[in-house]
Amino acid sequence: MGGIYVHIPFCRKACHYCNFHFSTSLNARDPMIQAICTEIEMTEGYLSDNNISSIYFGGGTPSILNKEELFLIMDRLRSIYNWKEEIEITLEANAEDIHSERLDFWAEAGINRLSMGVQSFHNEDLIPMNRSHDAVIARKSLDLLARRGDFDISIDLIYGSPTTTQEMWEENVDIFLNYNIDHLSAYCLTVEEGTALHHHIKTKKTLPPDPEKSIEQYDYLMDKMETQGYEHYEISSWARDGKYALHNGNYWKHVSYLGIGPSAHSYNGLERKWNVAHNVKYLSSIESGTLPYESELLSETNLFNEKVMTQLRTMWGIDIDGFKEKEKEHLRKHIPALLRDGLVSNPDNRIVLTRKGKHMADYVSAELIRDEDD
Ligand code: SF4
Image (cartoon, rainbow, N blue to C red; front, side, top):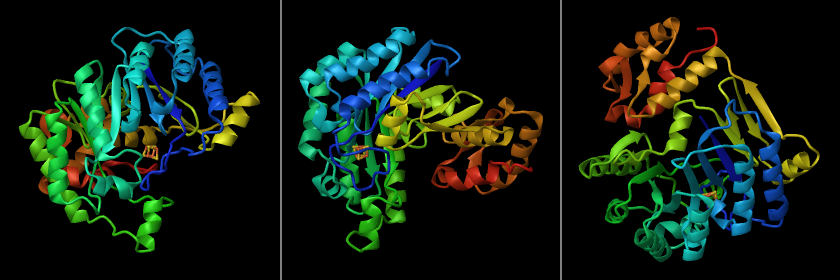
């Protein structure tokens, strides 16, 4: 059973570190919702099975959708796809959008999991990031969610920002833990070309992130979460009581998914395709009856490399038995050196990152992937 990702390409403000696709002009909102509904119809049949196990509203900022817009999209999905009650339907929510009225219609629409972009509980971090919420709003939103208790919650935090001292980071983690939330995603601040952060660093308006501080904060998080009973089940994700993110977990397991909306990616086991990351081009293409995407047929080597890179990020690691004989040989050839360097362990014919390996996951992946002519 596959999953569906819906990209809502609007944000109220541009966060300085962000390189996702979005527009801060909300003018095209109505035609965009119409186009997304049309694309849902046009892509029917992309997934071999219309029974789905997850829907994920990402962006951009899907929490800006009003009730009518959200129901239009959900009703269109319902007219084509089937799902059981236990489906995971996630909506990425900005803290400033968490109000009783919105929560009521999200629940009514079938949303049962919220992924909340908190990033920090300190205004000293949030203001330079140009987030549209502040620390008080973040806490009020989490208080409201805790009182209601009707959604599974995940929050995102960012570590390694030049403004985040170790003390502030430890406080962020403590506040998260006090809210008794089952899932955390924590990302290292990365400086992507073309972002305001990149420009600010180039023009010396902002200090660049300090890699040593990032390592210290990640290490602290790993230790603290372990003592609190959370499983570090993916390199950036922690969960307790088995509350793993199903939709994202399916990406790592190479389950098929269909992406709807500008910049959304899809995968069906044979090819990857990605929609144009441009709102105007997306709208005019859908309006003229053409799906606005490029695609790539995946070679055996591509598929192998993707599996290796994604499985390696998880606590279950790379399952060597799941590969063809020649691929197994390739993997086994690299294990001794990685074991010697303390980067992986090798339980039950799997390759699993050690703590040291988690800091060097890109290097380990690069060692294990294959060239086309290997
Ligand atoms: S709200 Fe999310 S998608 Fe929008 S700019 Fe900020 S980080 Fe990027």
